[in-house]
Length: 469
Ligand code: GAP
Image (cartoon, rainbow, N blue to C red):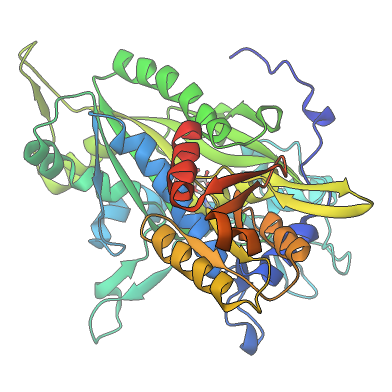
């Protein structure tokens, strides 16, 4: 890979302080701490009225790019719970773990590679039993010695049925990918797809992360958007990898993420997940550093090969053109819906000075914005104006998310919509009653134009279509 041209240290995050986004999210109803009235539960977050719209829009945008716009990828929605053997065969029972260390004094537990002073450790170092004493690593709370690292498996377990014993343990899936692998034959045969083709899924995954945090960046319950691309062995996978890598980065850019805040990072050989032959992350410059946004993985025949062996099912593909039978290799694009939504939220945040006042704007791409349009009355005391607003609102709502607000003066109403990313506001005023026209105001330019009432919906739909990637 060619090194990045931009000095990563020189790239500033969109917001200096994560707290700006956390507080906006809470105040405006994007994201709330889970079970807050009971003091919250670590690493689980709830999406509020605006957050659920944003996240649904992110998932829709991904589905559109990965499935709707293509002929070679189909969708799937597999169960979260699967036969427990799936996770033994996939290697997750044996290898899906992070290095955990414990304070000898306070018993607090930490993920070794998240501790200060471990930034440059290799995966080999992280497995070395002497690493904590050799480097003199201590507990960040009381500076007492830390234990040697041990591997901590990240899968949540439960029991299926009314008896709780080892015989009926089930795992909460830590990735959606396995559902696509065990359904490879079902999907391929029912959809009559020829290799290369893909199976895409969006759904919840669960990981008992040792040190979750940074708001919705690392959670214990989260959503993934994963696509498994089945290809001819070896060179088919190399080609597919090169094909998907730039496209996945370009997807974030197409929906508005600043290109200089995105980069690729290749995994070192000893850092690769147990299933991966090669992995490159798309990273984003979060306020807390460059971190993984999405992973592109060449999984070889690891998954289908192992599932074929362990289950006895024939997972070979017959290539009619060449007359060959083979186990397809897999190139995976693995994104997080929460992490993507979070990234769009952070990256779109800006503060501007307008007439000596700070204007906060979420410059979200219109496809991602929770509301596409707000309908606002200039005078809420005039029933004819309010009635006109509601008529327009009802018409707009047939095709898009729209909202009405009359709880403040117009300047304040505009600012509220700017702060939640609404691309257009429509204002009905006294003149509207005479000339049947309304004012459409643009979030980014703040320009206003007079538009006949019956042309408003068309105008907004055309503008949305014009910027759709
Ligand atoms: N199937 C491969 C796989 O799961 P991964 O890199 O472990 O690969 C893929 O996860 C993506 O899922 C990550 O890039 C991230 O966006 C998201 N993700 C993983 N763990 C997460 C967590 N604890 N909280 C939020 N998102 C997470």
